[in-house]
Image (tube, rainbow, N blue to C red; front, side, top):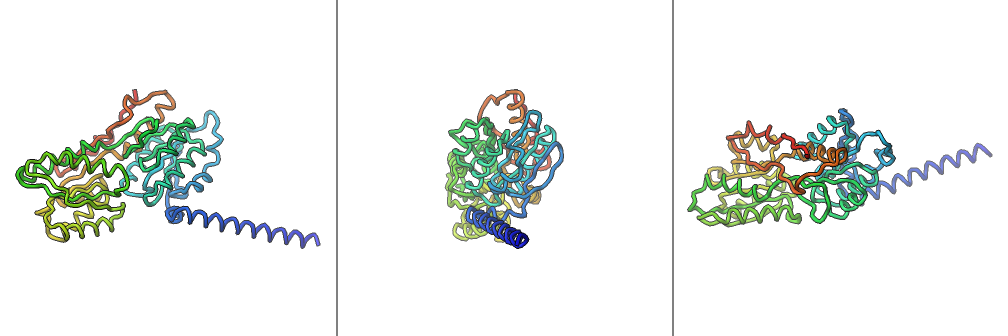
Length: 369
């Protein structure tokens, strides 16, 4: 009889475990398709010079379960920094990841790189909340995160550094990103050298998504700067890539079909420039259309070298990880703060003339004083 009771108890325990696992899976799936697709991805943890790959693109609950010791840090343990990226494995953000891991290696910091596979402010918010629950020592994130979880982190005494696009109305340590006015100015300087001052500029602009303020800030800056063109300036169309190269390509195919008089294609998303260049080449209109992109992915730089792109506006994604981690470390260990909250990460245009030489300048680190 006693053995039978033990058997029954074991069966019930197994059944309860299976039931709880199923409930957890359903909850994760309902929370976001992104989290489900990330089960076999790669979030990187860097510890004292060793880089190791755990479960990637961690959802909020998954991230909480991977570092139980972080919530019980003792004096003398390594600092723990969490980087909540907007796109876990996008090529341009992997440049930031390289910089972050390098800083963690040099400083002896334990670092977690987490984020969604596809743009998801909701998932990013949960990951910031998880970082707070883990009692992380510092957080680096990007402006798609709503202000509320960032304020929660700051209220908990965790310094937050924001990169790429800002999170206003928060007491973040610093913002480190692209100067959108300067971006517009370097774009116009290049375009005006190729289009006669009396010829109208008819431009189409593609952004990642129009429901984010950074897109409107960039578009408004372009309209303001290009508006001074003597021959006139018109924004013929504005489209979205949704951070997807196939969608970017389709949008450009439709755009050139609907507006054949476009003479300047301005791409404000990393995948959009190469997509546009491909469409322009396939349509045989390269001699009629100037094509510009942003960021310095390997594909984009190759297209500049072979003449398929006229230029790309870049900032230091490497320092989005490297210098950002150093600033937080210097703030925590030395009490230093940046002179300005808003900081330009080094906005320049890369063309055929400087494509082989610009890189080192974007890896220069400026220490806090």
